[in-house]
Length: 188
Image (cartoon, rainbow, N blue to C red):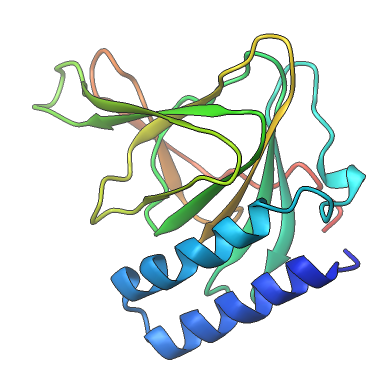
């Protein structure tokens, strides 16, 4: 990817934060949140190839992977009405809304074999940034608010998210299954 100036500045800034924080998640999230808010407030830097929806599935395009796998940055492109399963990340994440709107529903596990508890629902609009992590609450489902247009968000994760073993959950039972997401742009 040929980095635009706003994206290069974000990568450089996040690299400095991750390096100086030494793994301190709270510091990374608090300092990274305004940095991502600044990036997503500008909607002209994302190359069109990383903003393409798929007719059936949301797309997760890798924009940058830290050479040491300390973090990765992706664009999520949501076609009309698309949504994720309930899932976790196992690492910190910053979620910045750039175009459209998405709904995030947070869940908690209960006793094995019992339904998960839906804790909250938040709607992100352009310029807003949310955080998730194992410490803050890491299990959620995300969906495009719109049934008639595309939404795009930019996510930064505390590792190379396309390589990390994570879980999807059954809401009715709390059962979980391991997965590795990979990326929609497989040639990277």
